[in-house]
Image 1 (cartoon, one colour):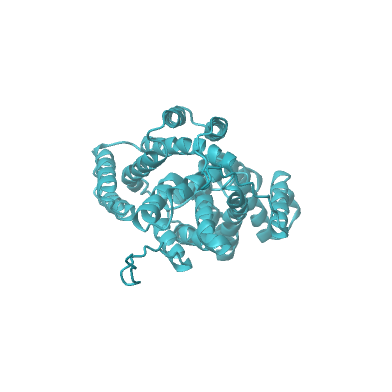
Image 2: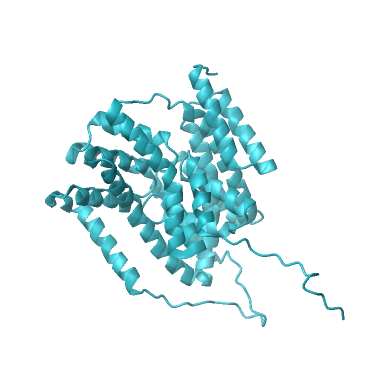
Length: 416
């Protein structure tokens, strides 16, 4: 029998993910995260699953499934889950910091220009062309996940198609939530996941005991108190402006289901009508600025905090907006990690994943619907999809190219 020496053996090692890698990768993704949370998901899928191969596809679908059931900005919650999965709580904090930093800096600069020089932007049309590139990237991610999670299974295909149709024609986050729950129930009762078997042929049914340490219990109590203070408007009884900012924006974050657009009318009523922190014009400009920055719409909280107390207020508003929901996501991620090998949870997730694929593909269609379509947008979308799907080109370059094209077309007022 021939024995191979260590020099003859080829060992394939999993790439080591460092905190530096997490920060730089999510900072890079955060710089071009235009088009909502599904655009961010598509870029994570391309950069970390396909290109760097530091994540499994299941990690992303699990992140979407869990984040969709929790309050808070979906994009940041998904990033927090991935960071925690890779490097625990420190990884979650670093990943969230990296993805938020570009949008936060951009929003702070715009806020400073606005209140210092009455600067207003009329460049919203630049993002019309970016939408085409983002839609192509999202569609690529959706199809790649479809091939791995759905293709070849009739019931999973039916769940995916149902989700796609309902999300396109019914504009309600309750429908999304209902589809995820429905998919989970279908997967659970019809046992869509094939259970792993041990060497003796016995099905492996992990039954890890739920463990809540004092840190999780303390964080849970604090989050409940924060949400209660928001619901009952307890902030009005405090004089400290920083405490008020913290209570208002953390309450908004923990009340958010379905994306930042859902909270716009509530924020307008609260910030303009009740607290009178902004005028109606300032609020509209604030939302417009948030659309010009990469990242979630709730970076608009920086604009409000900056007006109230300058850079310090902006920092407090940012931390209050994204901190509590990220902490909640990490808590749930820890519980999920304990139970992820339970067969009932695997079955439920097997039913949820086709729904997630339908959501991803539908979001590409809805993104194109949200902008005035012209020939350039359609061409950009088609080219992006082809290049991304066929040649695996990084989405960062495609989005930057679409931004440059949009700027040039806007400067020359050229439109087809």
